[in-house]
Image (tube, rainbow, N blue to C red; front, side):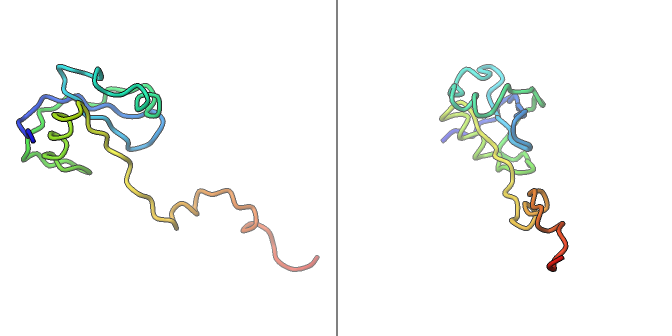
Length: 103
């Protein structure tokens, strides 16, 4: 399991908020499976950085990201899980806007 520093390109998904692909800059997206790219959408370059095992990332552990890039050629960062009550705020539920009572 290699966790040597890598210069990484990070791509943002246009389809899913807070979904990112980390890849080696020298390889780009060449090792990312076509099915994943289809699901991900056309990758939008977000940032290039030197990723070291000690680097702090917001939603991933750098050693795990480096290991997966070494093994698979990419690391997919999924969006954070949403709480169920937060999802209810965005569901179109017409019943909550209707007045009760038999008019």
